[in-house]
Length: 246
Image (cartoon, rainbow, N blue to C red; front, side):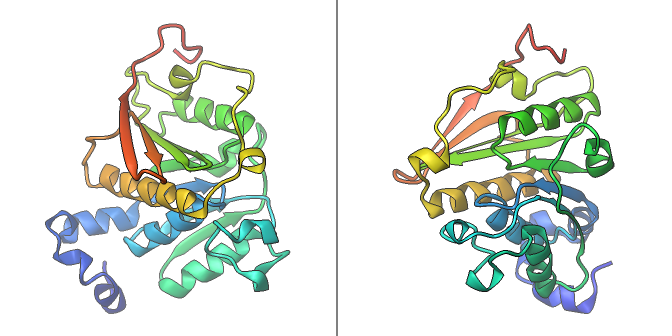
């Protein structure tokens, strides 16, 4: 049930037809797992909480560094050296004391993945680490868990949400059928503008909310965002006939 404080916090949002009492209570019950609290993850989790998501699991084994601050907008210089998940939870709880936020300051691996990712309504991968992305994708496909993949570099962001329905296959491996890490540009070599990460995180948050209110127009499409031109492209994705997860 929505308490009196939450009614005031979300009063303007609840005016919208998509967020009637039934839909809003459904959103509040969803369990979202976010892997990676970086440039995409920071704005993403803030907007999820600001839209009513209460049950969040945050996974990141990193600490806050000075070079993070231009794009990881939950953090400031007072947070340097602290664990990202600890600082993120503390600041998100300031927004709504009724949040149920669980944190793991560990890296996803074969041994802990089932412990961390089970019982999720949606898993969001913002790691931008090929080995982790493949591991998470495989787990979500095998367990029929919806997966939202996000990445960003320079002025460009990409997001795609896979429903991972049983007997209706489409996954990350269909888009990038590579077991070896592709030779792609990375933020530490080509750079990144903070607003690019922000736009990507905000778009991922909106795609998440759309998914929960049954607006699936852009689900299972590769959404490509260019911050410099403010252009967004949508690419239709088809199942890869030789996907190893079929």
